[in-house]
Length: 154
Image 1 (cartoon, one colour):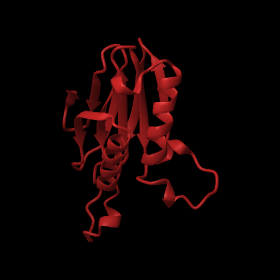
Image 2 (cartoon, one colour; image 1 turned 90 degrees about the vertical axis):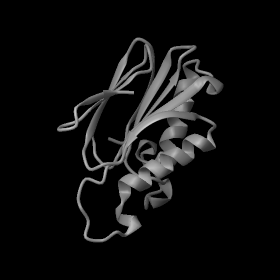
Image 3 (cartoon, rainbow, N blue to C red; image 1 turned 30 degrees about the vertical axis):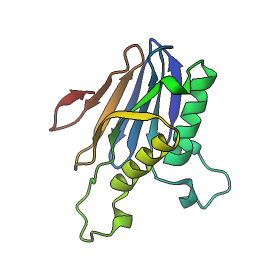
Image 4 (cartoon, helix red, strand yellow; image 1 turned 180 degrees about the horizontal axis):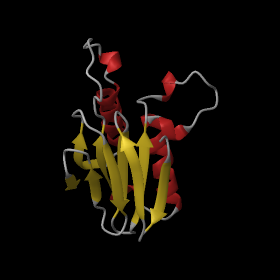
């Protein structure tokens, strides 16, 4: 959780146990460079600390992952994104938007990808179940494994 990693192919990056968290897979198919972030919260302004883990927040994790990829030789114009996660894991008595962290995470990730001109090409988000991800940096495929909802490749 709250981690991000960029690599050159051929590597499979794994992120386990996404509930309300969102996995963000970025891929430059021209240079075979990919990265995966496991984002916990929508905005670093929620942090009460001066020093925080940039991998924890949508606004800082996506920037940091993009920076790592560019340092490895990726070109921003070639990078596309895929996302998964953002579930509402527990039924809430209240429909209070502040309590819908999964939905807020998904919205923040979409916003930050758009802000960076990264095209979001596919997603598997929300619902009421967790996911684990395997991101193949050779071909850009994102395998989503769930309990009770099968396996999906996007």
